[in-house]
Image (cartoon, rainbow, N blue to C red; front, top):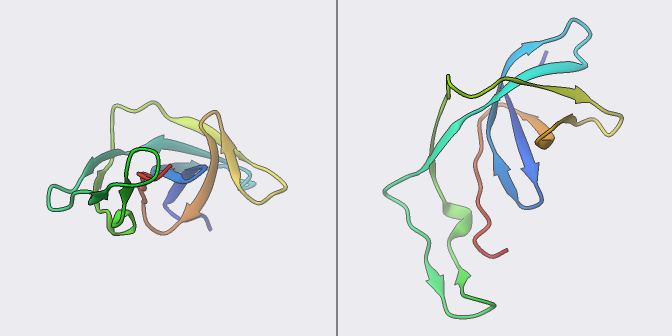
Length: 105
C-alpha cells in the first residue's frame, strides 16, 4: 500500500506532491504537485552572517498546503534505490505533505 503523498526531495528543499493513482504492480504512481503558501503566522528570523545572513528558525517553518486541481498529473517510476523518480526528481513516499525551503543554502 502506498501512502497518500510523494514529497519531492531536491537537495535540501522539499516540495509536496499528492498520489492520485498507483499501478497494479505498484512500480508506477501518478502524482500532482500541491499548492504551498508560507503560514502568515511564521516568518524567517535572519541574523547577519554567512553569505547573506543565517536563518536561525528555518526548521520551525510552517506551510499551508492544499491540493492543486489545476496542476498537471505526472508519472513517477520506482527505481532500485527504493524511491520514485519523475521529471521533477526523486520522491519520498510519506504520510503527510511536506514543504521545506532551505533559507541557509
